[in-house]
Image (cartoon, rainbow, N blue to C red; front, side):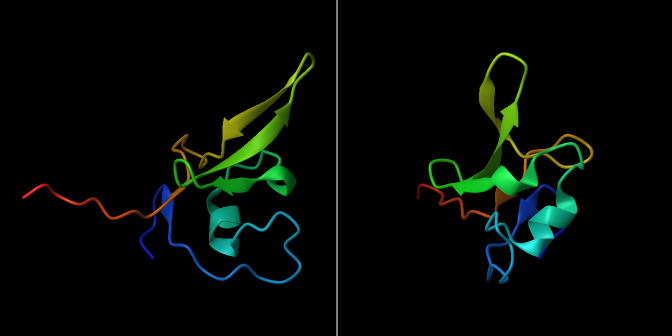
Length: 79
């Protein structure tokens, strides 16, 4: 796995109620609600629910330096 804002998809360990791989939990900044984190198939990135004073909003899970945490994807080049 390459370190950075990407995490390779892998087995989800038992006991992780959020269903998020350990590698993703290690990358995530501490101020986010990791219990609500989920991988969205639409964009391949992890998102979590942020409960604000007025509303609850779905936000991208980010690293300590602010980069979104997404799974590695293969980009196909048009030939």
